[in-house]
Image (tube, rainbow, N blue to C red; front, side, top):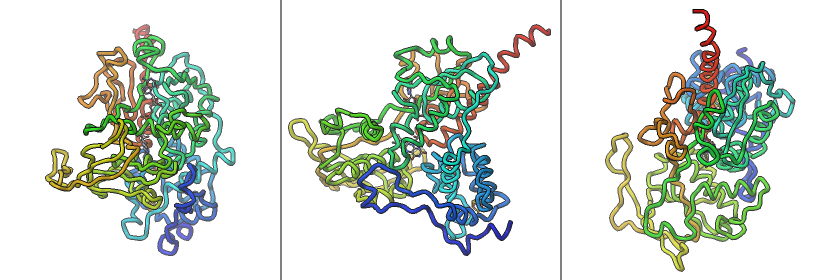
Length: 482
Ligand code: FAD
Ligand code: SF4
Ligand code: SF4
């Protein structure tokens, strides 16, 4: 093994080629090319096969990274793929959009020793793309029918990961989603330059072909109550994500041209999927020729600034009230945005929006500094007196984060217990809410988080639902035996 591995001293770290900023800024295709076979093998061989692999510990799915890297280095690609998909429902998605710098790669010992991390995410993506290409991704085969059904509310990564496992275990699975396409934020939130849409669509198609029923355009709270679904199914999984956008509460915040981030991104994603969107054609959700200011510093803000660049904005500025080191978005995406021409105003917050005829024309912002730490230990930003400055803007995008919607009220389910932040309370041991047979997973439990955590929760919830439903059919038999 030794001669195939541990090559981090002689082989430098290399990620797949990234398209030049000037070229990629003109389209919505992914910016990283595929690894060629020899490069993937070579990069995998840099792994030092740690006895205690910190990469694995810091992957939420505890992927068996050292073993599939070794198999890749040895050219045993199909086996490597089989191992990687054993713990991950969508390895090619995680390989593309996990913030690896904060998870697996950020904790690789080679990175810590200054040699540059093993490119774990790129190898993971490579293996699964290869598997699709070679036909190693097999159709979903439903387990022997159990005559029990599960309703999954939400077709995002948490709901899809659960639906797959439950179908494999032999349950009838119906996934409800209020959108007209499955995928949740993978399809309508995250832009194609990070995750192309056919990568998501082939996953949902595989589930539908395997007998998972998708009821799209179906909104719980409008088309059915939670109680209706409890009556219809033996168990219900709530995987609805968080969609109540935080608002911009400054004077002028309600002007024309001030738009919520998700409306803006959904429009752009719909266009990439071939839909026609009147709000884009009218210019309402189109940055072309405009000075654009995006307020916020998370992944959503990064996706908005880079979308605006691709739509042909005259200028794109990101205002974030903390500094670069404290921003929640991935550093890789900030670097990509900077390369593509986005101006970042760190330590700056909007104070008021100016406008004419009720349409926004500019943003008055104020410089901030980081003051004393708050209860969470993070330094609170505070205004610097006299630090005002102006930026022209005909489009302002609000990307200030998301909170849960009020599910007990919207779903006529006053008994459903939620936390004081509105997230659904689920038992950490079995992910069941306080309502018997109702489980919850993903962002609606954690608050806005990551795709990889949603997948982890969806898989765990499927296992918990399986145990619950087995016990349910086992119970009468036990009683009869007494
Ligand atoms: P979601 O993906 O939100 O899916 C929930 C689904 O439930 C949706 O399809 C919704 O339509 C449906 N739904 C909601 N209410 C109802 C209802 N009442 N009835 C029926 N259906 C309903 N994470 C990363 O790891 N990497 C990234 O690069 C990244 N970028 C992001 C970019 C943006 C713009 C955003 C907003 C988030 C990003 N995230 C990223 C976070 C990630 O997308 C989420 O953590 C993840 O999608 C959560 O999965 P989920 O299944 O819990 O919910
Ligand atoms: Fe890294 Fe994400 Fe893959 Fe885990 S799932 S190995 S964190 S890229
Ligand atoms: Fe390989 Fe890095 Fe993981 Fe160690 S921490 S097993 S070197 S990828």
